[in-house]
Image 1 (cartoon, rainbow, N blue to C red):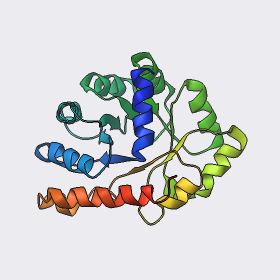
Image 2 (image 1 turned 90 degrees about the vertical axis):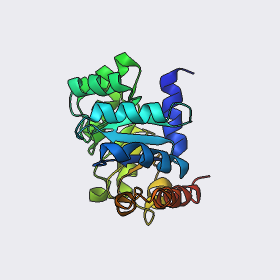
Image 3 (image 1 turned 60 degrees about the vertical axis):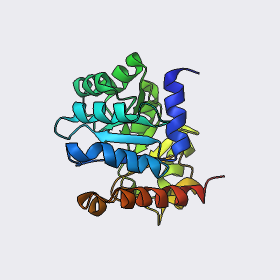
Image 4 (image 1 turned 45 degrees about the horizontal axis):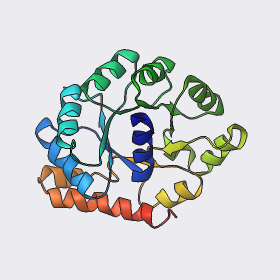
Length: 216
């Protein structure tokens, strides 16, 4: 199994990718560590953050001796993809489909997870070499949209993101999701403000438990 295949499997095994967005530089490592301690092994640092490459590199170093994999989200173009991969990102997500980003990921041996909504976008993404499809924003269409995409396209790997919470995560997995992405529903920003790392860990653990209760 290649490193890329191992990273993809780690994302699937995690069940949820934690979206670490808008977190201050001094907090990013303790937040990542707390979320990982809560049972999440896929950590996404968004590329729209200031000094995003530094943040990714910091988290990547902190997680080096763990089973966590660190990736970058909101990667909108090929230049941004190259920057975050150089910083250590092992998977790249986007809210949209940009075939150039997928191409960079494929050439660098990094997992590509572009954003899709329609069957046309999903088909184009798979043809471009995407590894997982990020159904975004999931709250707009709901769990039933997974079947609507997989019906004509086959068993494509779909990761709903945007509006997924402990209240509805079971519905997405039962509909055929291979994993989900979650930000504020998993990452307790109030606890971060208080530097309550136990609270951050517990919030992540609750989300992981909700997934474990529905997955075989």
